[in-house]
Length: 225
Image (cartoon, rainbow, N blue to C red; front, side, top):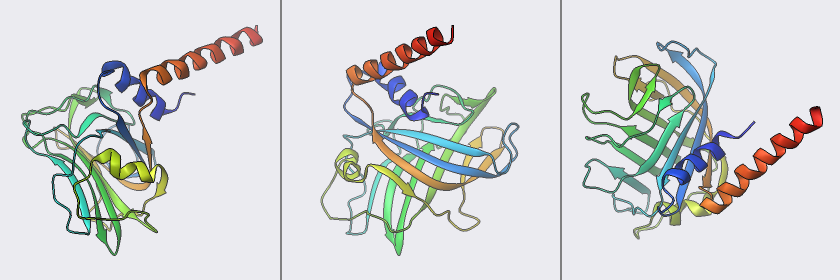
């Protein structure tokens, strides 16, 4: 079975070959409560954010935090792709964006990803069934965090390239949960468990990987005949 990360990476590369390198964040968790059909407590859920890695932090660090945010369409777009378990459609930058990525030194390190819009009339391009998705927030605490902080501006790629791989997350207390919000007011609430950081493969690498998967599938099919 093709990994969701590979699918997301190849999807983005095929639609944006000329773009700069991008960083993929895959957040894994478990649904705790849902009013949305098809999602139930204890169901696993994954959210993928693909960040445009050349963007510099928008909030100057004070030695204890880094934040990359987007509140106007005149500002650089933080995420080129967002999707999650069961979502349909293609992520489209909202006309009134409210998206961001940040890490904070708060006893243990806190991290968050948010993608969505600032007004109900805007759209993200994502749906569950036919109902539009308006906002996605994933947040948690990184125990034994590897993150370090400075005071100089830094891009997403320059900062997170030192922290590739999987990191465990501890959910925030009740009242500060991660969630996916729909236009009709329904919501999926979930607890984060871990997140993975990787890079989008180069277009040639993606083609090679997909070619290998096709050849592998063809070989298995011939072997079974």
